[in-house]
Each structure stands twice: as C-alpha cells, then as structure tokens.
Length: 410
Ligand SMILES: *[C@@H]1O[C@H](CO)[C@@H](O)[C@H](O)[C@H]1NC(C)=O
Ligand SMILES: *[C@@H]1O[C@H](CO)[C@@H](O)[C@H](O)[C@H]1NC(C)=O
Ligand SMILES: *[C@@H]1O[C@H](CO)[C@@H](O)[C@H](O)[C@H]1NC(C)=O
Ligand SMILES: *[C@@H]1O[C@H](CO)[C@@H](O)[C@H](O)[C@H]1NC(C)=O
Ligand SMILES: *[C@@H]1O[C@H](CO)[C@@H](O)[C@H](O)[C@H]1NC(C)=O
Ligand SMILES: *[C@@H]1O[C@H](CO)[C@@H](O)[C@H](O)[C@H]1NC(C)=O
Ligand SMILES: *[C@@H]1O[C@H](CO)[C@@H](O)[C@H](O)[C@H]1NC(C)=O
Ligand SMILES: *[C@@H]1O[C@H](CO)[C@@H](O)[C@H](O)[C@H]1NC(C)=O
Ligand SMILES: *[C@@H]1O[C@H](CO)[C@@H](O)[C@H](O)[C@H]1NC(C)=O
Image (cartoon, rainbow, N blue to C red; front, top):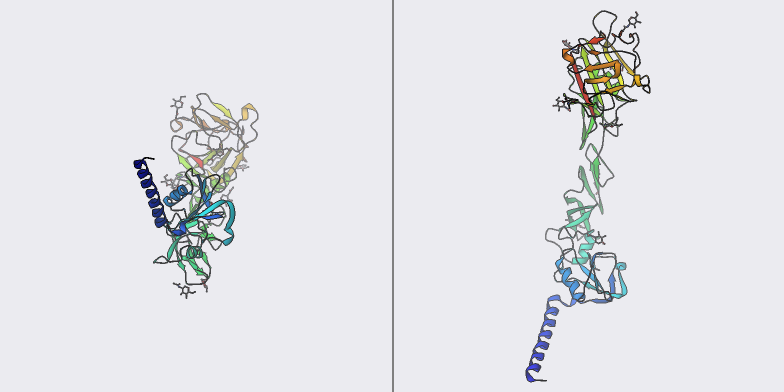
C-alpha cells in the first residue's frame, strides 16, 4: 500500500471514530436500543428503513407524536409508537426476539405538551416526564375531546380537574369536579349522561306546547313555534280557519313533525305537494294535491290517493252569504278516466278535475267552476255537477283571491 493511500485510510478511520463519538454525545446513552424487546399496542405508523434503525430514529425525531419505536430487525422496518414504555402499563412492554425498542429522549416532545400528543391521564404524564409544566395544565384526551386541563401531580393518584378543561368538557352544562371524575349538570334544553350534554329535540320528542296552527322548529337548546301555513291573507280573519285547514292537512303531509306550508307566488309548478286557498266574496274553499302542478301544454290526468277538497265558508241556502261550516271531502275513486283527481296543464291554475278548476287569468273571467261530485265526495246538501253552489255560491265564479302554498320539510 502506498503511503498516500495509507494516510487517506487513516484519516477516514479517524473520521468514523469522531462521528461515532458525536452520535454518542447527542443521543445520550438512554437512546441506545433495548434488544429483544418491544412496546405493543401503541404503534401509530410503520415504515421501511433500508439503512437500519438510525433511519427510524431520524424520522421519529421529526414527528411530534413519536415517543419511541420498535425496529423489526429482519424486515428492517420501523414501528413508531405514540408512547414510551414508561407511560404505559408494564404488560405492554414485552420480549420479542425479532425486535429492538428505542425510546426517543433528546428531541422527544413531552407528553401532553402539544395538542397533537394529548395524554389520556395525568399519571401517564407524570410517569413519562417525571417533571411538571409550569402552569400544571396539559393537553388531554377527555371524553373524545382534546382539551387543556389541570393535573394535580401531588395528589395520589395524580388527579385531573376535568372542570378546568379548555374548551370546557361540559358544553351546555355546569361542571362539578369529583374525586377521580366529574359530573355535567346540563343546562335547560339539554340532556346528558353526566359526562356530556346534547340538545333535546323538543319537536321530535313532543315536549313542546306549540299551538295546532304552528309547527315546532327545534333550535339549539330550545324550540320555536312557527306558522304552519305562513302568510295567508284569505285566512287571516279567523283563527278557526287556520285551525281547521291545518287539521285537514296533517293526515296527508309527508312528515308529522317537519311539514309546513310556504306561499308560492306565480311559480307554483314543480313544488311538490300544495294546498290552494280560494276566496269568492265571503266563500272560502280550496284543495290539496300531493302531486306537483305542471305546465304541460295539453292537460294530463293524474292519479292521487291523498288529494282532497275542503270548504270553510260555504253556501247558506240562498242567503247570498257564506256560513262557517268546515268540511273536508276526499276522493271517490280515480281509477276511471273521468274521475282522475288532479289535472295538470298550462291552461289552468289549480285543477282538481271537474270538481274545482281555476283557469288562467281567473280574476278577469268567469270560467273557473265547481262541478261537484265527479272525483270528490259531495258535501252534505250540495248540488251535483253544474247545480253545485256549495263552494263558491255559484257554479261558475270569478275568484276574489287565490293563494297556493307548497309543502316543505326543510
Ligand atoms: C396512539 O396509537 C394508538 C395505536 O395506534 C391509537 O389507538 C391511539 O389513538 C393513538 N393515540 C393518540 C393520542 O394518537
Ligand atoms: C392537589 O392534591 C392535594 C392532595 O389531594 C391537595 O392537598 C392539593 O390542594 C391539591 N392541589 C390543588 C392545586 O388542587
Ligand atoms: C359537587 O361534588 C362535590 C364532591 O366533590 C359534592 O360534595 C357536591 O355536592 C357536588 N355538587 C353538586 C351540585 O352536586
Ligand atoms: C312568513 O312569510 C313572510 C313573508 O310572506 C316571511 O317574511 C317570514 O319570514 C315568514 N315566516 C316564517 C316563520 O316562515
Ligand atoms: C276579513 O274581514 C274584513 C273586515 O271585516 C272583510 O272586509 C273581509 O272580506 C274579510 N275577509 C274574508 C276572507 O272573510
Ligand atoms: C274547526 O275548528 C274549530 C275551532 O278550533 C273546532 O272546534 C272544530 O271542531 C273544527 N272543525 C273541524 C271539522 O275540524
Ligand atoms: C307554460 O307553457 C307555456 C306554453 O305551453 C308557455 O308559454 C309559458 O311561458 C309556460 N309558463 C311557465 C311559467 O313556464
Ligand atoms: C240547506 O237546506 C237544506 C234543506 O233545508 C238542508 O238539508 C241543508 O243542510 C242546508 N244546507 C246548509 C249548508 O245549511
Ligand atoms: C312528499 O312526498 C312525495 C312522495 O310521496 C314527494 O314527491 C314529495 O317531494 C315530498 N314532499 C316534500 C316536501 O318532502
């Protein structure tokens, strides 16, 4: 070997020795692997390490969650743990001839010091760190939430004050700290199991006192009573009108809890189920259709099992004024062509077959009519076909006002 080659060899050897010393100083002796051991049940991630366990060490140092790792020697694989053996039950640290265990010491993030690494008990922190944070509070996992809470490390065993948690552990409740536990006393409108409080759905649970003319709308911690059928000027004179129409609608609506009716203005096609309210002088009547109105160019007969006609103010045997007499009339049968309950087309407004049809531009003509007894049962005392004056006072009529409301559940 030439002298120069020997010199180079010597220099590189010295360099290696120097590097080894540096690693020793930086890592400290505690970071040395414990052979034939492993920590089980705390691996959050694995990774191949082609250049040996030092690669695992390098990666572990970069991650806040990494507290230690197992190295599977034959496979050259890292198993990164979110705990050290000190923080765990002794039975988690077991002999394993295929692995070695390394605790990260020098650059390890203390357990409970960052939200990414919450502790599950104060004892765990004490065992792991052996020292305390200045203000005594730590990031903890409490009832599935990551919070900052106070640990009393001098009590035996170490005790967490759950009521000091930030954000509060008892959301929507008052917290009472007890030895080794806590209790949430829920605020009104919330219910709980002592550990958490959740909103009571007064509407679904039927715990509300909403009037029949309103529907119940659940809110966070309470509920509101909103109009069941909002904004009818035709029905505004008498609360009985709204009450009767609501009781007619409730058996046919999609949801007994969520359904209500909202007014549509000039655009009531394709809205799903609707209720129509018609006023002709002192007469008030209308119908419900469970199928959407459509703008078909020629009228289409449409089946229904839920449609009905109703009247609130109706014919008083020739006096000219309507009397209050709420009635609801369902479908006779609709399986024959003549008796389909609903017709849908561009030439008409609400069209309950012959029984009740509102034409386009109804306010300026007298083609709207009630031709009774075709698809819907005749009201008591009402004339059949074109002798029907029951609903509007006359067979053909010009409505004073027509309102359409569509059903919504949102
Ligand atoms: C730690 O890892 C275990 C095992 O994968 C996992 O069940 C647990 O949720 C992890 N804990 C945290 C705080 O990430
Ligand atoms: C911690 O616990 C000890 C023993 O139970 C008690 O004497 C002490 O007052 C507690 N400290 C705090 C800050 O609650
Ligand atoms: C709160 O807990 C303490 C025991 O730690 C108990 O004496 C007290 O009665 C509790 N308060 C309420 C309102 O239950
Ligand atoms: C009732 O209708 C009016 C307008 O017609 C609207 O401003 C109001 O928000 C509605 N109220 C509810 C509770 O839907
Ligand atoms: C409501 O009452 C007013 C005043 O009494 C009356 O002019 C109007 O015609 C009534 N409307 C209906 C639909 O009865
Ligand atoms: C109409 O409403 C009044 C007042 O709420 C009620 O007494 C009556 O029984 C109702 N009639 C019908 C047919 O629903
Ligand atoms: C309904 O259809 C007719 C043609 O059949 C059209 O002129 C009209 O604009 C349509 N109306 C709506 C509201 O779409
Ligand atoms: C009209 O009079 C007839 C016979 O007198 C009676 O049967 C019917 O019930 C009356 N109708 C109304 C709406 O009052
Ligand atoms: C109600 O149910 C019918 C079918 O039964 C559906 O076509 C309609 O969209 C529903 N309406 C609402 C408001 O959910």
